[in-house]
Length: 499
Figure 1 (cartoon, rainbow, N blue to C red):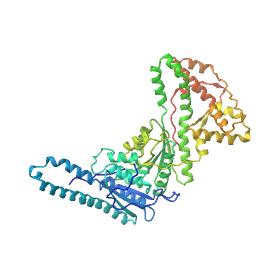
Figure 2: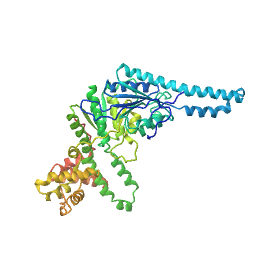
Figure 3: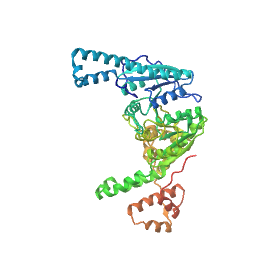
Figure 4: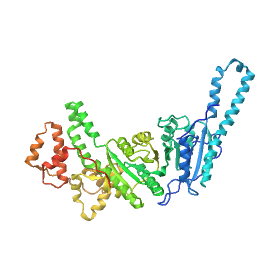
């Protein structure tokens, strides 16, 4: 008899024939500091090691009276029937007699129809026994059809808040990473999805790691991680990774391919100065800000966390961190801060799902931290923007700043410029005159600093160093650029870990 299909699953639809018992678990209740966030769990079953690890974790997350567990197995009787008919032409001569062939068809149909149902029942009975041993409510569910489609259809039916599935099924190869069914289901699932990659490890062993990029899905993953860390009493590491090198590389390559005319149209020097300033003064601060927000959320929930700011390509930097920490679970937002509505999974999340040697939970739960908490640590103001606020009466400045921050945050800005101040003011106070933008006064250079700058023979690099050194001097309130300011920007800034 042909082997039953493995499974894992996005599309809503009416139940297919073969569904033995519909799941009846209700939608998740709002989590509180004393409860885990998932109350209706769907587990894909096929008796593989990874699926068995999934039901084991479902039982632990279920706990008596706290959550229900639905086990689902998908089999494809129709596929086997079609394949048998396609192979009839290759049967030996004695089997081609019409009477004999019809008899074989009946035998095969009986074997497939009842045999696959018996196999499904066995898988579900094993999971039901595991739940019964721990007084966890269990609902069996059998579906006939294409494995990944039926799994997705059930997962997205609105009855569950967590899907658990193995990275590989019975047909998977050791060291093959994710199975094709798992990949298809993960992309289409619209609920939190836990992928079991190391069935020999328990999630509660810890430590666990959550990665932040400022998106609501990532903060949703953080909230789940906090609940798990509190429930299991295990260490929680929260990391944020940013790439300080990309724009340096990009502009270096652009310098080699742009003609003089194209450079003038692109305003290459101005673009480079802008990106250098933003990266040096803002990017690390923004990602460190995400970690500060995480610490504030964790403190409010009574959970102690360790935070780390990582520099480098995010998927690479986080993967290296995982190799050092060796967590039992990694939690990620399914898509990131730059996702568009059509995106099914973020690039960093997809890469880490494949690379991580631990279970991975992809969060479809969203959480937006309070705006004032976020903007205080992730948003910066240019000197011109700060100067433009001088025309606002002092008693009204806090309210005006918050309104401008809200305006910028809604449009994805993390650096407030004078233009954003003007736009926000015009929208919020249409009758008010535009604020006067005060240009930042030019800085003098000490003679030693000037000689050291002039020693740089590369014109583009010399101009870049000038802008960055002046920016650093202004940030420190210096009246002139000193050698120390220039030396500080000649070396790449190292990312410092969070507390």
